[in-house]
Image (cartoon, rainbow, N blue to C red; front, top):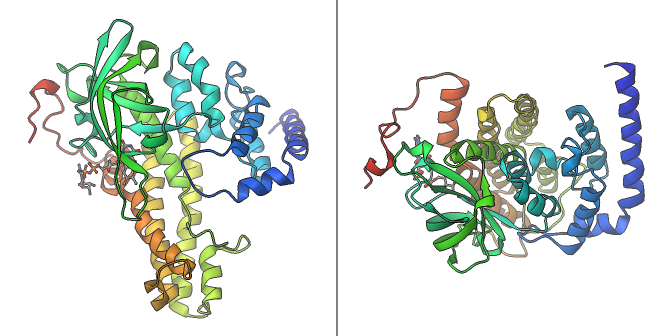
Amino acid sequence: MSSDNQSSNDVLREEVRQWLAENWRPEIARTLSQEQYGWETSETRKAWLANVVESRWAVPRWPQQWYGRDLSDEQGKIVEREFAAVRAPGAGQDRINLWANTLLAGGSQALKEKLLAPLLKSEVNMCLLYSEPGAGSDLAGIRTRADRQGDHYVINGQKVWTSGAAVADYGMLIARTDWDVPKHRGISFFFCPMKQPGIEVRPLRQITDESHFNEVFITDVIVPVENLLGELNTGWQVLNMALAYERSSMGESARGPRSGVAESRNEEPLVALAREARVLAEPKLRQDIAQAISYKRLNALNSARAKADLEQGTSSSIMSLGKLAMSRILHEEARVRTEILGAQSLFEGEHYPRAEDANFLTLNAYFTSIGGGTDQIQRNIIGERVLGLPKEPEVDKTVPFRDVRTS
Ligand SMILES: Cc1cc2nc3c(=O)[nH]c(=O)nc-3n(C[C@H](O)[C@H](O)[C@H](O)COP(=O)(O)OP(=O)(O)OC[C@H]3O[C@@H](n4cnc5c(N)ncnc54)[C@H](O)[C@@H]3O)c2cc1C
């Protein structure tokens, strides 16, 4: 690195530190650190994010025209590290904000002007309208249709497993716009306004006894032409980019325990739990804990490598590695937690928060191994696109979708 770069990096680091010292006040930090997991963003968080966006720290690698600073990736990381050092959220959205990055890459000028800032400030809630009853792993088999009528599209169909649909303002929706070409080539990608007649959301109950995902019935729903992302019928490419962002964030982090009982911040949670349960000296458990922590550390390094590849415009398929690894890590961590607790893990209820957490994490691990594409599908992607193995046979790949046979 040249000394010019070094000194401009130092100036930037100092600028971020100073801004955080003036703005990241202890009462905001305290309020945000006590927030529980949920779909809706608190007013305090929205106000903080608005400040971060308006001060141009949310997406510093983006162009100045869109709330950025045109910084290099290395400089973007400096900003993120300073925010992370004081545990302040909001920076690094140019890497991880699925909605905003997809919109920036594929959206019309009008839609970007309307929604980019609200997305960065978490002022609008979003959901993903991809999966359908007959199209999950085989997503290109969707049958929801979009038909152009004047200055808008009319959407009809059904989606399922739609996380957050009940509170969403917009959904990123894929729909078929050409039935006479093979399945991957007739799909378009839209930002669909959710608060309108014709959208009916029915909650589904999950194995964790929560109800975050839903069935969505779509009848004569109106989507303006400017809400189309990418060109008509090129939605598959937009979708793949959006899936790469989703898999990358799922490969990096996952939801933690939900009991709200504090876990140690100074120690790895599994080590702290074993210490609390007085089993830290047991050799087999020590090995299991060490292995679970090693997987996690390794995955973080792999994920950094994948990000670097993505930033250079190479294939997004490497994101599948991180997501698959995270799925294995979550199942393994939940298993080790249960083993540490032994018979105590059979209890439940507010008096047994550690058991509640272990059981919740055991069930919730399936979120990562199914959502965003199952483990088996990630293995197919890795096999075909990373390892160069022969492609899975696909009998309907070249057939016009209208002629594809369904059960
Ligand atoms: C917690 C959670 C949240 C979700 N949120 C959303 C959301 O917000 N929006 C959305 O659109 N969807 C969402 N989904 C849906 C998710 O993307 C699908 O469940 C997933 O893609 C699998 O599709 P499917 O359920 O139809 O299973 P299927 O595709 O029917 O698969 C059934 C089984 O067959 C295996 N299989 C299928 N094809 C192959 C193959 N070619 N090779 C090997 N094995 C194969 C699968 O791995 C799986 O084990 C969510 C799912 C979960 C669990």
